[in-house]
Length: 309
Image 1 (cartoon, rainbow, N blue to C red):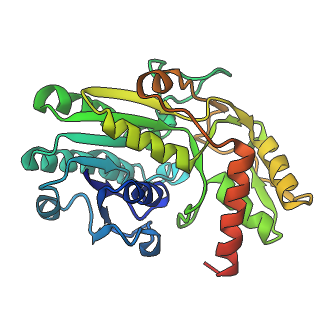
Image 2: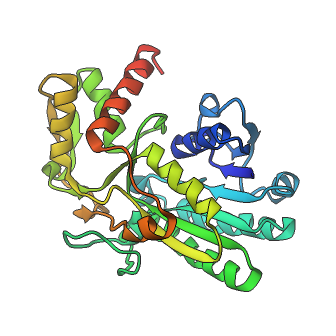
């Protein structure tokens, strides 16, 4: 299989590219390196430095591609509150440009990295794919809106697509610039003896899924991409943020200093996935538990901090 991975120099994209190369697939990575890192791209993949809004570039690299894994996005929820336009331009409009180029190049499959932010607020129960979708921040709205575009392109132009709604992803290669994600920030802080910033006093319940399981879901989605479908990708279990801090304390072997950051706009209290659909239809299930995944993540960042990267 010849695959294009947009955003392949980023956190999830680099892990996905590595898996695809390991499985013997031919991989082209498209990334403008605005938030990704060249050194994260697997050496077996071809890196094309550029942006998905560059129609001319897309026309050059898409012929012969069998499936597109679309991960390129502006992805920090907090910043979407200060610059919503950027999020809709990159996550929605540029996605349409990609689909138009796919249509012209006769590329018939796309696996899209969507988000649990599509749902918005919920009560303390796992969310199903057909639950109410009312995003409470521009990031979630921009990601969810593109799912409707994919549905229309399937029905009008025959482009098959799968939207994967990620919950909280963590693991190696999470080198996001100005990182706001809790786990990599906390791990770095813990390893450098700095305070951990904790919002809402840790009274939020989240569904954490290890990046290896996320990329396996992408591969299985590509192999079963026929029509238009949406799947939750999570661990299927919720964990209080304050309990993740306790697990980190156990792993590093000492009590951590907590800095109370108060409340933060755009955060739902609960976000857990019902993963029965993806288990049943794709045969996918999470393989890495939270404690194991956190240990792997801590080991990764120990090396990165030693390298001063």
